[in-house]
Amino acid sequence: MGTQQKRVRRDMPATYRIRIQGYLDESWSGQLGGMAISTAQSGDEAPVTTLEGELVDQAALAGVLGMVYDLGCPLLSVEHVRHD
Image 1: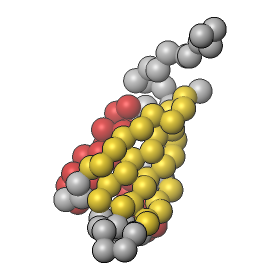
Image 2: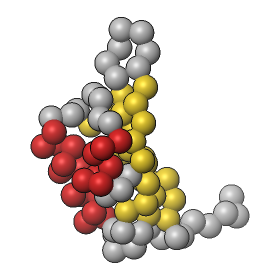
Image 3: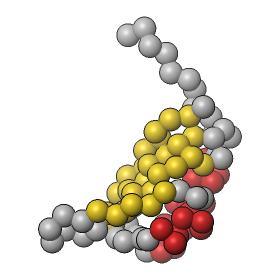
């Protein structure tokens, strides 16, 4: 109970993990803020692509999410992994 967390600020760099339904290959990384891209598929289920990396601020996160939306990929989750 004695652990303290730094405040998350929208104008500071942070690492995010975004999961979407569908397949994106690594060639999209540059258009998605340089995030690492990996895709997994289990049996007959739809593929799930994970984007993970540091973004300069939450405006950059909004840009990545907007691109995902424009691509028509359903958003499964967005996770704040860490910040400096």
